[in-house]
Length: 310
Image 1 (cartoon, rainbow, N blue to C red):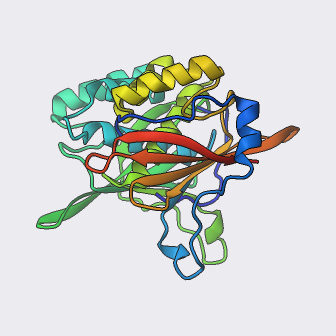
Image 2 (tube, rainbow, N blue to C red; image 1 turned 90 degrees about the vertical axis):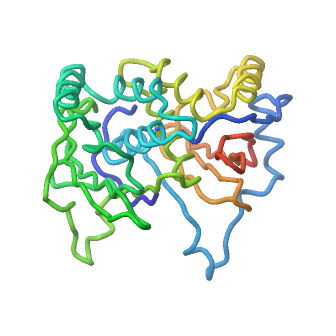
Image 3 (cartoon, one colour; image 1 turned 180 degrees about the vertical axis):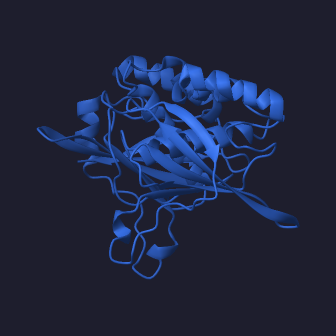
């Protein structure tokens, strides 16, 4: 997934699959910061190769980010190797949709025999979320098929209320807002590919941040469903033990929710880097660098470790 600049922001509220994370359990938060200073940051590419590295950046409370978090994690849930993850799909709907719209969506699905969020019976191979002229609306473009199958594209307009929940999804032939070459930097978009490691880790972290920073308070049900989907049972247990010892969220390695984050390719195909920033404004800014290690076959998370903080 790739992200551009900020769109409208509001009070904040983003899954790979489970494996066994191995943590540096012995370090407390303050000790970690001091010890990590001598450890190198995530791998950097040369200028020639940097264009090939995949990255995703998200911003807490950003409209485009939140819709991308939702659709990315929802597609992961529907396309799970073991079969659709109904528990995660349900938790995502409960978090991101208004109760009234969720009810309307069920009625639509019963009548049309298709998934109301995807407007299809199958899962897209790639997707893009883009700004629209209205600050509370974004365009979601879903691409289905490919390979030996014909490729079809569906465009949806997703409308949100000011507090962030989705109130309507409708098909459209309107393309996402386009900027002139001069203003293109101001157009925000996020793209993801089904089954892509960077996409999945970004989906996980984005939806997890949304769950932890919900306006009504942390959404424990969604956070639990995300962990169950993206973490192996073995690592989930190790993570709980680490959190009990350190009194810090083990996924974020912080007590607070980040204001922004970037997910990128690591030193090898099994490692993804996550860099997130906490604070800003009148608070000191703290940046933490993590490496997320993935199981080679299904992409399950097998390790999260801190490499540096500053």
